[in-house]
Image (cartoon, rainbow, N blue to C red):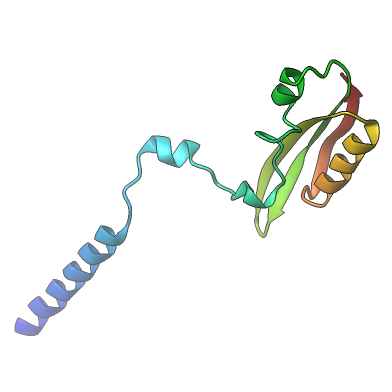
Length: 114
């Protein structure tokens, strides 16, 4: 009887320790938290290639490059998209070429005049 109580106590203590170590998440965290670390995909936001900054700098013409597709991470798939604005078509095409190394299954990859 004493041994049975000890086993139950040990099991209960282990379960509590395990649950205490888990971080309780809200439904919002589970639905909207980032699921893929996008630090490894080049970012144009906040750089000189950000389309908003490009327009604020007084550029009235140029090229907008948009690349989008799927990134595979073992058994998971993530949607990735990036856009940037460039002064020349060559810069825009270089951006798309760079992005092709990060997007495993490209769905959209275009340079369009602004």
